[in-house]
Structures are given as C-alpha cells and as structure tokens.
Amino acid sequence: MENFAWVFISALLVNNFVLTYFLGLCPFLGVSGSLETSARLGLATTFVMLVTAVCAWVLNTYILIYAPYLRLICFIVVIASTVQFIEMLIKKLSPALFRAMGIFLPLITTNCAVLGVALLNVQQQHNLLQSALYGFGASAGFALVLIMFSAMRERLATADVPLHFRGAPIALITAGLMALAFMGFTGLANS
Amino acid sequence: MKENLSREEFLKGIWRDNPVFAQVLGMCPMLAVTNSAINAVAMGMATFFVLVGSSFLVSTFRNVIPKQVRISCFIIIIATFVTIADYTLLALVPKVHKELGAFIPLIVANCLILGRQEAFASRYPTKLAVMDALGMATGFVVALFSLGAVREILGDGALFGIKLFGENFEPWIIMILPPGGFLTLGVILLFFNWFQQKKDEFLADVADAERGSR
Amino acid sequence: MNAPAATASPSSLRLVMTLAIAGLLSGIAIIGIYESTLPTITANKARELREAVFKVLPGVTQMQALVYRDDALVVVPEPDKDEPVVYGGYDDAGQFIGYAVPAAGPGFQDTIALLYGYQPAEQRVVGMEVLESRETPGLGDKIYKDMDFVGEFKALTIEPEIVAVKKGTKTADNQVDAITGATISAKAVVRIINEAHAEWSDRYPAPGSEPGLEASEPADTGGEQ
Image (cartoon, rainbow over all chains, first blue to last red; front, side):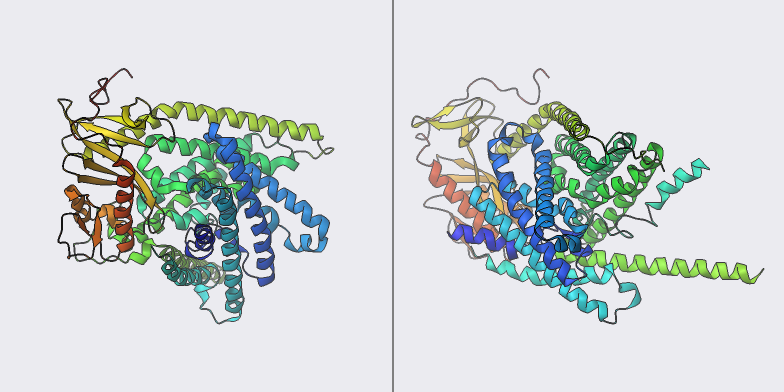
C-alpha cells in the first residue's frame, strides 16, 4: 500500500512531469494564458494519460515483449486513437465545450507527457496498478502545474513587465522559479 | 530566382524563424537534454535526421496522402524515423544513448517536427521542403547547443567534458538541474528579443534615412 | 503551392489502404533497422558487462555466467531471461578469483544498478561499479564520480553486513564512509549490496569448490565475426 501511495505522490509532486522531467511543456507554455482553457485542457489530458497508461501497459506486457522495436509506433497509435475517441465523446456530449477547446484537443496527441507516461511506466517496470496510479499522478501533476502557472500568467499579463521580458522570457523565468519551489518536495522522499 | 528561394528557406530556420527562439517550439527536449553540451548536440543530430527525413517523405508523397488521414500518416512516418534513430544511436554510441534515455522516442512528440510537416512539407515541393527542414533543424541544433553549453559551463565547469576552470571553481549546480534549464532559456530568449528589437530599430532607421534622402 | 486538387472526398477504402500501406512500410523499415543493429548492440552489451566484471574483480581475465539450479551453482552459456545470475571471475590460468554479483535497488531518485566483486574465501567485497543510476547530478552521482567513495569498496569485510557511517568516522573493516550531501544515495548502494549478499551467500559452494572454468571463451573480441 505504501508503495502505491508513493508512486502517486512522486508523480504528482516529487518528480512532477512538467517541472522535473520537462514533459508537456508545449501546452504548458503555449496554452496557459487563460485559466479556464487550462483547466479544461488539464482535465482532457488527465483522461487521455490515464487511458494511455493502462492501454500501453497491457499492450507492452502481452504483445510487445515479442517485438520491442514496435513499441514506439504502437504507443503513438494508442495515443492518437484515445485522443480521437475523446474528441468524438466531447463533441457528442457538449458541443459548446468542443468548440471552446478547439485546436488544443488534437494537440494532446503531441503532448510529450502522454507518451512520456507510457514510456516511463515501461522503463520503471511498473505493474498494472502502479502504471494506472502513475498515470493518474502524472496527469494530476500536469494539470496542477498548468492551472497554477496559468493563474500566474493571467496576473503577469496585467503587470508592468519590462519590454524584452514580455511573452516567453518572463514565462520561462516564472517556470524556473516554480521548478525551484517544487524541488523542495524532494524532502518527501525519505529512505 | 529559385536558387534564392531555397536558400532563403534554409536560412530562415537558423535565426529569423528559429524553432526554439522565435517559434518557441520543441521545448521538451530543449530543456531536458541540455544539461551538457554533448547530450544537446546528440539530441540535435537525432532530431535533424528525423526532421529532414520526414519532410522529404511527406513532401514527396503529399499528393498521394488523403487529407483526412494526413496527421496519422505524418505521425507514422515520424515514428519510423525516430525508431531508426533510436536503434542507430544505441548501436553506435551506447553511452550517449543512455544519457538521453526516454527522450529519443519522445522526439516523436516534438511539436516542431509535426508542425513543419503540417505547415510546410505537405504543401511545398520536395526541394523546398528539404531546405526548410535543413534550416529548421540546424537552427534547432544551434539553439540546443547554446543552451547546453551555458548550462554545462556554469553547472559543471566543463564543456564537452573538458574541465575549463581550476579546482576552486564551485559549480553552480542548479544550472544542470531543471530550474536552471527554465531560467537559462528565459534569459537567452530575453537576449534574443532584445537583439531582434535592436535589429528592427536599426532597419527602421535605415529605411527612414533612405526615405529622407529622396 | 501545390495543394492536391480537391475532388470528391476519398472513399473510406482509400483512407484505410493509405494507412495500412504506411503502417506496413513503416513496420518493414523498423524491423530492418532492428535486425541490422542487433549484432552490434548485443556485442556492446556483452563488452560492457565484461569490462565491469574485470573492473570489480582485480586480476580476472576470464568470466562465465553461473545460475542457481537444483541447489547448486551451475555454469550456463546463456542464462534464462529473468533468472538471477552471478559471474565467476578467473585469472589467466583458470583459477577462480571471485564472484561478480549484479544487484539493483531503489536509490534516491530512481533505481541504481551495480556490480560488486566478492571473494568468498576472505568474505570481502573487492570492488564496486555502478552500472545505471539517475541520481541527482552533482550530489547523488558522486556514488560513481567520487573516487574515494568507490575506492572504499576495494577491501571491505562483508560480515555481518556493511554499514554506512558518517564521513570520517569509519573505525571497522565493514564500515563505509558515506558521502556528505548524498547520504541517501550512498546508503542505498550499501543496502543494495547487503541485500544481494543475503540472497546469494547461502548459494555459494564452500570456498575452494567453486565451479571450474568451462569451455574456453574467446580471449578478447576475437573469434569469427
């Protein structure tokens, strides 16, 4: 039980996907201008990451051991299919939400965090439950950081930022400071 | 005319439309594998191979691939090249491959590559597409190297593994850790913006002067 | 711009065929590269292992894999995939020198995989080499970068077990000076070795009756290529 809680907490905070592993940066820096969009994107990505983590594990354990070189292509197909599926689902359930999310939904396919979850689960040799928890923790960590960051960026947009800092530079420096803060969580790992 | 056009496509990727500095694409590997110069260059070369190869194929087959499945086809092509690069690196330079770890397969998710296929390679003839890819990829390698060099020099006191400073240099460890990546890139982008603005001002002055002297 | 002329929307069959062909070509290319790099990759792995074994067991020039089957250590040319394996190290004359034991366990950041050399006659660890680690650069990575730390494993009594002590307070032969600022990583290394030893110590035959060197191995990378 301890081990499972740790898998979740470490993915969420200690080895946060965005601030420690540098995964999921494109939407992190690109989308986080608006808090509302970020929250929605975070939710959609969470779903995709969870489904991907489980499907990828099943695929890897039962099929890919015979053909490890096909791993990458199979994972990416799983991700593309999951995103396609969730796109259709949202379109059916809430056309308004679908319109609001626009281009960001298909972009989840190229979110390195999603592929990263699948690959890291393989690398760390998690079992099924651990993979699911890891996927959940990682996506929660991604969503958490995305929301926090976009809240800060909304504030920054109205602040008096020096000319050359505006846009990407100040965003990155802010991210750097967030990463520094998150390093404090490594204390959670006690031997 | 055509010669200038293709040269222009190549050069734009290096500075003006540099994928990292100007377009802010390809962030994930940019920050993750630039903790040393050699890792940065190796990742750059791998991405170079994938980008040029994919652009070549996508552009060659652009009239054959139906619009509805184009993204999936692009991804299949990209993933194939990445797998090739992965195994080639593992065979030729296993130590570097170990350092880059999971980030080689992650080249597939590099928005830079898919972005170039969608925006350029699928719409332009092969020669132009390849020049564009060469330019973007070179710009990417340059960006990766500059970040990797700064982080390694400050964070480890070395470049390509060769110690630069004496025994007493206390390395700024944070540079090779994640926060250092963000901060360094932020500062580099800051200089890029500043430089761009100065250049624009200069060109505007020149234009004014020309107009004034007429 | 050469956008394809937009005629009627292509049939589903066309879409599926395109994807199928793309997938097929891709699969062929991938299998091709895999097969062609496989010999090099396997040779690299074997060479790395060899070098590590020779590093942790001084004086060793030949080695063979040993697994535990039917209550005894037996020589195997190719160990089963998940079977725990230990390597016997022998000198030029075929004399047994010691075991090179692979071990792994959680470190501070991620799993640490290492190889340590063990001489059963003196019950001593005679070398340690970190094979894989993702510890914090500048701190945890000292477990392989700090030569003083690595050197501690060159003559270390393993009974009753290895203990990591605060740097500078080492008094007994089974103690290791930990690394300041990387205590967790250093202690992880010690724990990994202790655990591996606990697992294998019952399996070793009595000192002096270790499996002899079987089937001459090619001296270096020679042999038909």
